[in-house]
Image 1: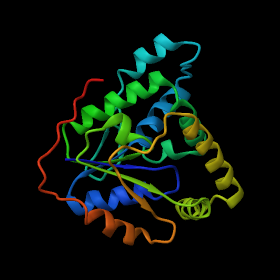
Image 2: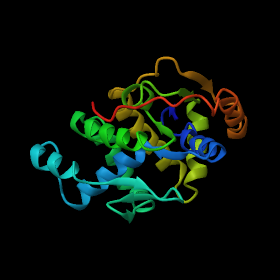
Image 3: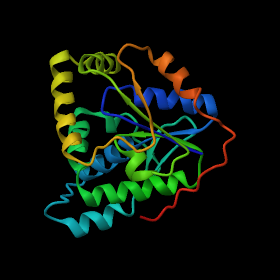
Image 4: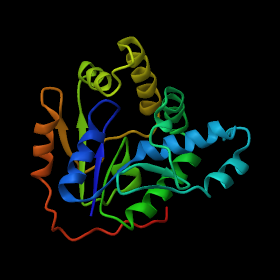
Length: 219
């Protein structure tokens, strides 16, 4: 089974995906992890998709991104869960996420993973681009102040001004890209609700015994 959760940064989608995956015994996959891994590789190896497209694409098509049993992100077998969450990677991943070649690579990597596991997938357009035929699709959203507060809770060592700037930058790139509300998704406004309340609302709509939808790995 594939469940998608779409929404902009700070809406709580990753936390909710974790909660639902644990409840159902599914794998939790974040589209952001894939973009972060690719960004990390590009920064580490000085790859330039704009000026050296063919070589960059050829290399990125060889990388392997997966998760271990503790949901750590593995890049070519190495645990990169912490390093891909640096500020440099975060900001640059939002930039490259609008590149069509990068999107195609990430989509294919994700679909290969979805084809092998029961997954809760969260991202910005995963219910539209990656898994439009997902068994269940959710779109969650919140007001800006709520999003800022949630990001501050995730990053207690980062001051508010920096959080606001990062959110503004990421929204700018996300909204310039192909971000759309997925067709057929349950839409849930989360501003005045705890994540536990949102979780209960979402889980009540899911039948874990529903026959699995096959997600094709090709484009």
